Amino acid sequence: MQQTMCRLVAAVSATALFAAMPAQAEPTRTEMIVGLRHNINAVLFTPQGPGPFPGIMLLPTADGMNVADENYCRKLAEAGYVCLAHDFIRTYVIGGYDGREPLLNNRAEIYPDLIHVEQQIKTLPKVRPGGIGTIGFSAGGFFALGLASRHATMAAVSYYPALGKVSHTPREVRLEHSFSRESAPVLIFHGTVDHIPVQAVQNIDQAMTEAGAPHELKIYPYAGHIFERDFSQPGNQAAAADAWIRTLEFFKRHMQ
Image 1 (tube, helix red, strand yellow):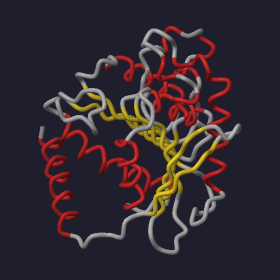
Image 2 (cartoon, rainbow, N blue to C red):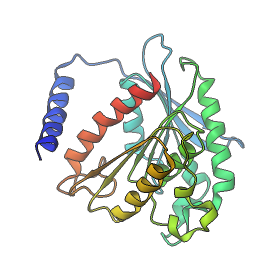
Image 3 (cartoon, rainbow, N blue to C red):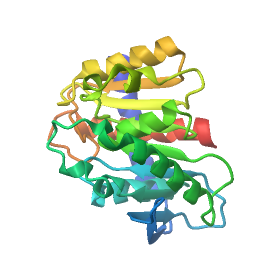
């Protein structure tokens, strides 16, 4: 309880600090087309200043890229990252699934496309040489974990990953069996009232621990799905504030 209160105080203090700081120059917003077949809509946010800056790829929920993803990408740019959010979801028609189809249906095409987009980010002006980080939400969080398991990204943050369908896929392609000591560092966020069972993230947490894969898991009481963009659940706002601080700390450790 004391540790939780300390985190909440830190979140409130950080919010007050940012409010007291002078307004930063608005990042530059650029619309792009990315992907192996040049068919994925993307939005790039670039910090003001000479750079170079570390690069991050943002993967949206199964609803496809929207203003919440753009706002999060903008915040990362304000924090000193070149951030590219792209709508691979709509390109691969994942948003058309009704919840009963496994998320891995198009994995053979999706992962090479995501890796290609990371390579494209590396070539952008102001992007620092080196690896690209990934942040994903729900379905995007699932694929962020997949990239990390293959060490196809430098570091990955996964918000409430869509793990509910993992157990319905053949054993040899299940995500929980793809991690190793060589996997990229991962940070996972999940809420106790998410419709995706907490047990799903606990299972993958255990599998990653057994594999020796570097990772962290934070479970928020009373927080639901999409907690950082929908404050209708009692614990969502506090979870969002804490997760933002942890996200910046995580990327700073593994990408600065």
